[in-house]
Image (cartoon, rainbow, N blue to C red):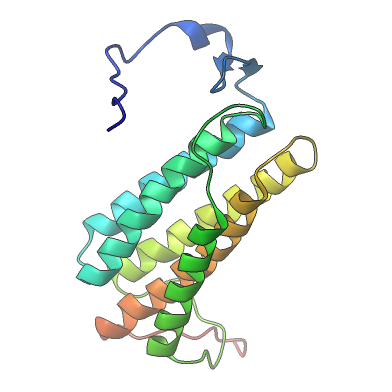
Amino acid sequence: MAKKMRISKVYTKFGDKGETMLVGGEVVSKSSTRVASYGEIDELNSALGVAQANKMSDDVKKIITMVQNDLFIIGADLASTKNTKVPRIKKTKVNKIERVIDKYNLKVGPLKEFILPSGCIAGASLHLARTICRRAERNIVALVDVEWVNPNVLIYINRLSDLLFVLARNENKISHEGEVYVNFRK
């Protein structure tokens, strides 16, 4: 078994001048697109923790925990350059997300109209996490435009927003909150 990393000190003072160190030792500005990208992933992971703290089905909680672990790997993936040895998100993780999307999409049925991001607390929280995921995706695309990024990261995050959408619909369905359709007539 690999030795676990222990963090003995929360603050280092290294970032006091607006710089941070990537995995592998490269020093970059905290305003860099790479740092912003893994910061968005951290925010998404935290939003999923909040969503999971709500009353939600046990099977969805397990999926969220799996995703949170994947996001931690993606954060490390984004916090490192191409030649740095870190765990990388793999295509198998994307395939697993796709299988879960297909399963839950069958449960909730086809969309009839556009829906508002609302419903029960768990459903609305998952919708909020979905929008954070979309923002993270946009930031990762900006990073891909200028630097190397593991291609599976972008694919995974794109699928994840779809997964969060169907999981939000699932939680709203089983809570009997239902979906609120957009009213274009007003």
